[in-house]
Structure formats: structure tokens, C-alpha cells
Image (cartoon, rainbow, N blue to C red; front, top):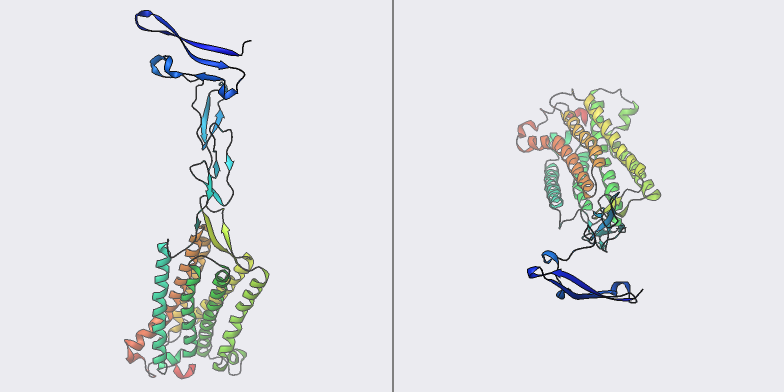
Length: 392
């Protein structure tokens, strides 16, 4: 066979006349892509369009070619690459999966994924949470000042003002602890987030438990010399709080020594971005921390509920019952919410659970006393607080 061909076009022109014109050459000895050389300016196509030698257009980048069953190989379909995959050539037969830290750009190139975390700059919810936390911090600080100024009045003294001071300080620290949950997680913030809240909240709940138990034992006329009356004397109050709180400290120390929290880059929750978050390390230790807080809150609720029928002039047990009801409700609701959200929404759930539980304690226990001290001073008398001497 000859290896060089002149190719001519046979076309019908005006008046049924024919024209034969050379328009291409074929050289078999050249490269496959250069063997056929066409001069499209010297020949005519029907309707002025160049015909194609296949029934399907070529698949662009970002697509793969899939063959239709029973059709010629020139007839195929173009299928878009799946999420996380690219195809950077035309008529590609398969897609390429991007690395975990990269994401397709227009399906033809892998580019680094953007990082996302709860930040002051790009998330208005973080600003809302911060403002709410600071507002309640200021409220708690004002209540703390009121309690210091009126610490010698019957209402404040009857409720063990030293424990009240400790509760208010711990609530203020919890509101400030919200700052640890906002902005890019680092090693220090991951270590302090849950451990600091767990310890501070244990101090709060321990103080409330001691207050409630003292009230309950006082009005139940515990036998003189019994072990409970000795344990909950005013002299031993702070030791009991220390023991209950130190148990949570031990839990946190064991947690940090065995499997401490650490910052991680979560590439699985979302395909198009990387979530920078804190990994709890040991889920068991985190659960024990929350479980111990739940145990203190449950015991608080039970004791306060038993003491709900105290004389009307001294109704702190009723307020403590409501506060523990709010506290337990918030954290019971927190568990399914925590399990059902992903990414930075987990941090938002934690923040609002912390704020809500502390606001419940603040509103139920301390707002009524501030109302009596500031608005109804006529109720802030020894005559009204009939059981004042019993508690002291």
C-alpha cells in the first residue's frame, strides 16, 4: 500500500455541476496525530457544518466517559465526577479522588480545603454567645456586690453568705469560661474547656448541696450528736465542699494523664471544609465528668425536693428545687443535641448549655434575695426570718 494519499472532495455546485477539489493529504509515515492534514478552506460541507465521526461529544474535564450497553464505542455518556473527585482530562475513563485535606475546584483540580471553627470574625453566633455571657457575668458581679454590701442583713446571713459568695464567684468564672470555647482551638484551650467547667460547676453544686442539706437537717430536727449534724456544722461546711469538688479534680487529673483532649482537623464531617475542633481524647472520662455533675445535681434536687415544705418565711429550698430542675433539664437536653450536631455547632450547643444552666441557678436562687434586699426591705428582718437562729 502507498503511504501517501491526496484526498479530494466531490461536491455538487450550481446547475448540477460537479467540482472535485483536493482538500487534504494523508501521510502514514507521520505520527498518528499528524498523519491527516486538512485544509478546510478549499472544500464544502453540507449546510456549512463539519461532520463528526462519532455520535457523542467529548466529555470535558470534571466528567468521565461511560459506555452505553449495546451501543458502539463512539456512543457514550458523560457522567460528572462524585464529590471529592476530579477529572483533569477530556474523555477520561475514571475520576481521581482528592486527598482528605483537599477539595475539587470546578472538578478539574484539587485545592486545599478551607478551615472552619467558631470564630469572632466569621460567625455572628459566637458574638451573640459572647455578649450574652458577658451580660450575665456583669449581672452576677452586681449581685455579688449587693451580697457583700448587705451581708449582715438577716436574709443574706440566714442563707450562709460565705457559701453564697463562693457560688457567685464560680458562676462568674463559668460565664468567663465561655471564652475558651470561641476562636481557633489550641492545646491549652482544649485542655481547659471541659475540665475547668467541670471543676467550677462541681464547686457550685457542692455549695448548693451543703446549703440545702443544712436547711433540711435543721428543720428536720436532727438528733443532737448525730453524724449528719456533725458533718454539716458551719465549721465543716468548706471541708465538705472541698471533698465534693476535689473528687471532680481527681477525675480531671486522671483524664488528663491517660488520654487528654487535643486539637484535631476533622475532615469527615463535611466534604468541602475542614473543621478544627477539640477531640475529647477519652470519651469515657468525659462521660464520667458529666456523670459526676449530674449526680451532684440529682442529689441536690432530691434533697431540695424533700425540704420543699419548709416554713414560708424561709423558702430557699423551693428555689433550689427549681434551679436544679432547670440545671438537670438543660443537661439532659444537651446529650441528644450534642450527639445530633456536627462541627462548630457542637461548640455552640456546649456554650448555650453552660450559659443556660448557670442562668437557671442565678435566677432561681439569687434573684429572689436581691428582690427582698432592694425592693422589700420590710421582709429583710429577724422577725420575718423566724428560723434565723436555728440555721445559725
